[in-house]
Length: 529
Image (cartoon, rainbow, N blue to C red; front, side, top):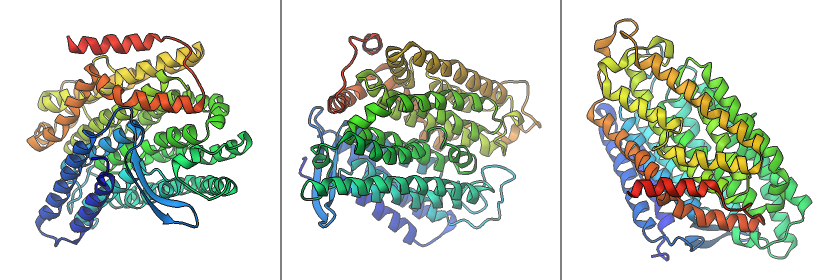
């Protein structure tokens, strides 16, 4: 089964689906292209699930492929996944069909998210679904690439569908947001290019140049060179994540993009930043990673607190979610650079849980905004009286965002926080303030939008409850948040071997038995009883 080119197929299928979707003739609401896009994404998910059954927990990189691409550069078309890559590929293939189903009418002619958006703007409906499939294919390629040059090429290529999804569909300022997104990402990519070229110089000086991850891991790079290479990689990944102070593109983007596009960006594309820190910063530059730990932890803590504080003052719901994600990505980066198995496993688990919880919150918020015609929190109220299912799911997904015990984000967040206290008491003390701040802005948002005597403006009849399609797109996320909340070991069994191998390569060891291990164990055992 490992000899079958699973990963290439997972890249080619959505790419072919994107081409087919774009080539189909237009019709009334472009139903056929939508059906082809949905069918392609479901097929890709089915293939990814089948592939995952052949994964061995302690096997390192699996489903590997290696073909010489550019011999002079030492570049290969090389693919493979370990525990980290497998979970990111599965997360990608799970979210794309959900986004396509949730965005079924979002790209139609005259469709708007807010009442004041320009309904006369010409929209290429097929293009939205074609670009979504293209982004899926390129994201899978990023998470599966085991050649640094191939990774860089597809890393930059993801910007193409992302740019057109942001700039072509969404609010009135979407083009401005798309340009800002592109400028930040290209700037980060340009800095990373210097480090990619630096790796070529290092490998060529040792003999035959190679960009293969395994070959580069076997090269001893002097600490001084590692520091320069680390800076280039880390800046690019900090922009992508995003991390303070290079985060400002994200709130503007989530405010203007469709909620489906925001899910693709925040829950899939932005994970490339944290993935890159784990794969390349820790995996290839261990000495520099240890050297940079104090500075990175400082920026992570700033992101955690800053994102939560600024989110409190937001009136636009989608912009609030953007700042919330800045805070959450701070937790992920913090867990990575604590350099402990508890923090590392918590960070990878956080990546998965954040993708599920934030996707659900964006989508249910999008359904609400389309009904009310505004994303303004102060312009809503009393929704629970006329749309109880919508209000109930909004509450559950909001509670997941604030890491309520029993829902999957709780396990990952508590693992990172306890690892932070193990690092130093003040690290944990600063990080834990986000729990209070997040609870404040999530519950305050819910109170202002869902409770109250009547809807603002008396538009009860214009706020129907969720229909079957909308409930169907949210149901898998709802089930996953509860299932992984009670059975986190389903994911941790895949995550832990990868984290242990990475920390062994970095040359660090855990300080000793951890309270978090017992917390997670008891939590998991409670779910089995």
